[in-house]
Image 1 (tube, rainbow, N blue to C red):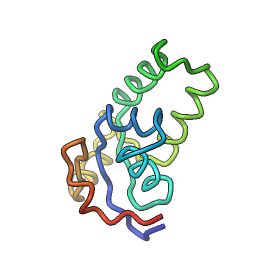
Image 2 (image 1 turned 180 degrees about the vertical axis):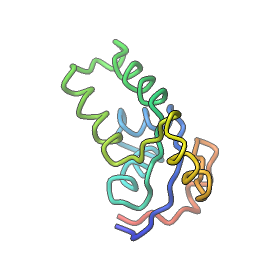
Image 3 (image 1 turned 90 degrees about the vertical axis):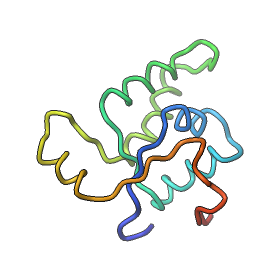
Image 4 (image 1 turned 30 degrees about the vertical axis):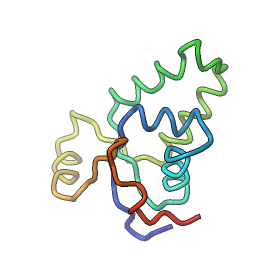
Length: 112
């Protein structure tokens, strides 16, 4: 685990793929947050969206599986609340990276 890992805003679709599928780029991203190489930033609205989407029938996840997948992501994330102005001002003063499918993942040093 890095002392001060980069804080990143992950696209919800990327997080969903990282949680639902075991291979490829999404798996590397999941491994990175699990090992502390990056800290996801998450807002309550995106967390709610993720929970809602994990409940889609096409994923065939039980309530317990959804909770476990969500906890994997959410418990390691840094939460932001729109009402907490001090937290938001601190987050704004510190660089954060926004990661999506367009990010040059092959250039990101993620070790196993």
